[in-house]
Length: 169
Figure 1 (cartoon, rainbow, N blue to C red):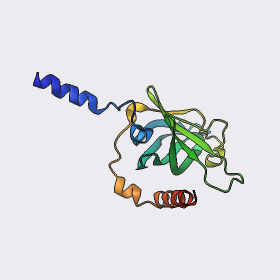
Figure 2: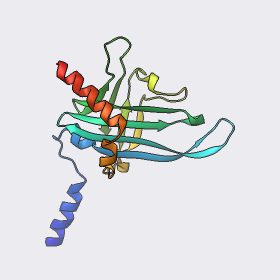
Figure 3: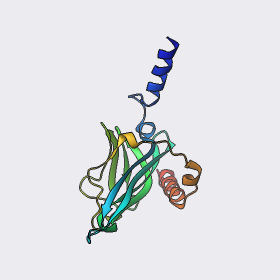
């Protein structure tokens, strides 16, 4: 009986309560390691990485770097906010040209990223996109390098910009 209880506890560690916040549900590092290529036929290894770090109960820091053929990529980092079951990035700015909206959510066996109408195209090279992207949910891992990530320039800039916006509201 004790063994069955221990097995049940281990099984529940990976589960997330259905009513928990998307910040808690999505926190972690997701990745995919794959063979990529250049137009001349040269093959090389690439990695797609998405990191999500809680900032407070309704916000998280998200950093993503997705790699595409011929060395093109998409890279974006910033604060995302809970909107329903998703975390959503809204490009900061004064409204003049700043309309990137990227949704991040758990969808079955995948972490889904989607900018809808390619509103985030400016964060990508010619062959890159942030529309209808998925990474394997099973690739989710705890971020073991959190102190280094939080000491990064990208993290500091994203949190400072978010706080400035938050203070104006």
